[in-house]
Image 1 (cartoon, one colour):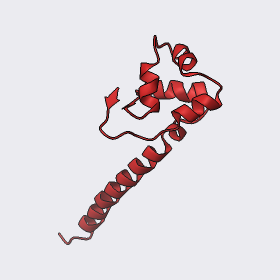
Image 2 (cartoon, rainbow, N blue to C red):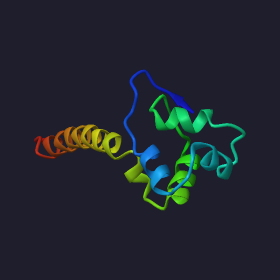
Image 3 (tube, rainbow, N blue to C red):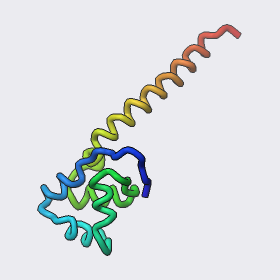
Image 4 (spheres, rainbow, N blue to C red):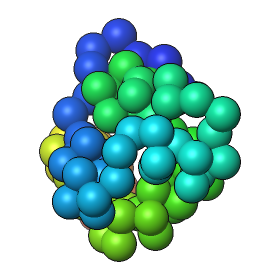
Length: 98
């Protein structure tokens, strides 16, 4: 579980409610003894593991990407920007005379 400084917006709570589940019910289905972990994830205080993220998507009947749509978008921007810089450098290197 990753602890984070700034809370990360997600759709976990909305999707749980849409699925008609209480925090306690969803936690029990996921095999948790209490509601603490799910509460922390829903409020953006920590991130679920990959396995938990997949379980949540299955439980709520949605895609993993949807649960953290805004966070995914910011990561995508950062990754694509860095990737483009690397690709630009590679292209420059291809045009350098030997």
